[in-house]
Image (cartoon, rainbow, N blue to C red; front, side, top):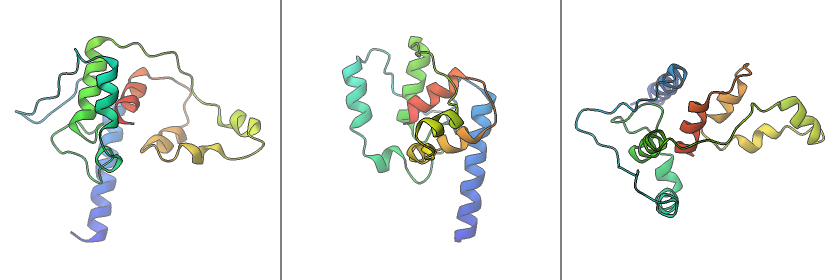
Length: 144
């Protein structure tokens, strides 16, 4: 595959992931026969061990696992999300960040660069909206 074709494929993949998030579909879609890991009985310590036992390059692979919903990069991330949904994990109240106020408090420094290492977050933060969507936060927690 050429570099241009790979770049086009990556852009198409990112666009599909973005569309999936905007659909706000809380159902995790998988290829037939693929199962998620059932983490509903795992305690917090086990979940923490599972998450942090995965190397960064495996947690953020160059390409997504094609067997899983486009919002996720790997089956384990989708498993975390599904568990959050099933167990009804409550998320503490969040608010949309006011970048102008943050920049002012930071003495004029652009603080967005400090968030750039979270894949997909800079694009999400660029959106001109002032609404909070809890499912987006769940996907973020499951994938970071």
